[in-house]
Amino acid sequence: MRDKAVTNSTCLIGLQRIGQLEILPQVFPVVFAPPAVQTEVGINLSWLRVQAVQNTAFVTVLQQSIHPGEAEAIALAIELKDVVVILDEKKARAVAKKLGLQVTGTVGMLLRGKKRGVIPEVKPLLYSLQETGFRLSESLIQEALRLAGES
Figure 1 (tube, rainbow, N blue to C red):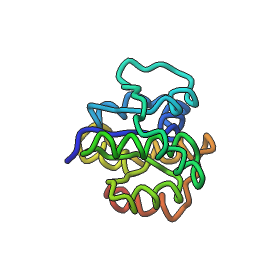
Figure 2: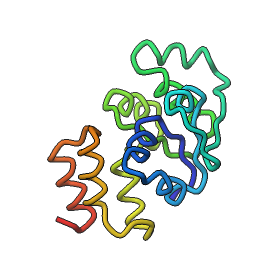
Figure 3: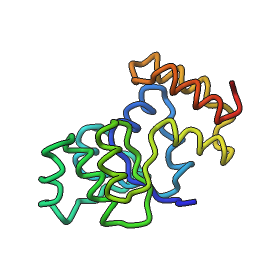
């Protein structure tokens, strides 16, 4: 199981809203983010490794179809190799998968956290996220609860 991740801002913002940012570095001991994500989130985290993307031309191409933070996260994941990229937006996830990246989302990260014993239950976290405006369909919540053995 890969222990390094590149995150987009959605996961960080969602976890910040529910006061659970510390989960991410426990699930992935090494967490990278591109500068666009750091800027969007607007907080400095001691454990978050902000790293610029070298291939800015590739980022420009990706930005024609996805958000700048997502584009930088995907490009950085390709450059770093052997990382999981944390993306929640459907279009960005599809682009990353097409490029051969291992993709998870905030919900998948929480499921991994439960599996590793970082969190005891995902259910209260999922509903807390939903209450703060984080978009989670009921079908996604139910599938996550099934996978977590909490349904």
